[in-house]
Length: 197
Image (cartoon, rainbow, N blue to C red; front, side, top):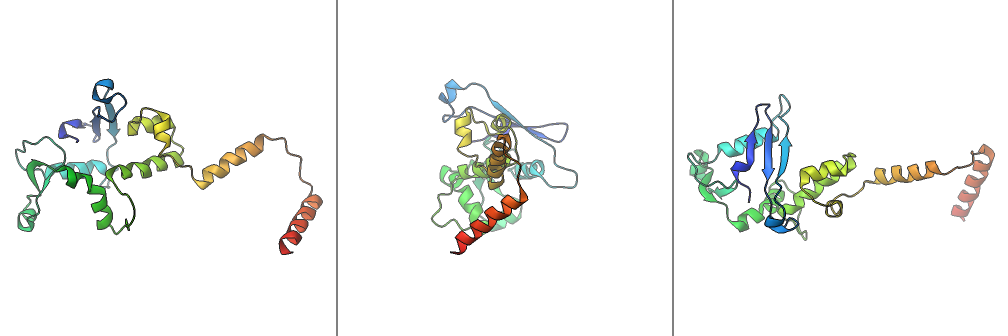
């Protein structure tokens, strides 16, 4: 349940987001008093990036909105919506909020039949991408808020290329004999004959 007070817009064009302790953090709210601070860099010049999107979203809040929650109740009146009233001055209901990811998948045409899609599903893809890009685990954890490598590694799946590179590294440390062209050809011929038979 994020609040708009967790976002600070910086002079350099970026955003600082402060994630407060949550009940599912180790030790619960009382057991984890340190807030996680995530610095979102400024959008690249000429591109509408995350900073632009967050500013656009916040600009659609009702004037003098008293509700401090980030996600507001959605105005489904098409006429009011077209006139700029996107949201009500009230917190979005839990059911609507929990179905965000399903709604997004449906809107963009992703088949979610027989798939357990929840908002938390959105963590897996970026974490796996960071892992594939070779970003150090400790750096990724500082962004995702994971407190232990074991919980982080649930999301980090190595790519096929990473597996090959790892095996190549192991093979490289073994003192292998130099190949002899004639021997190699004999082995290849023998292997091909066995496969053909």
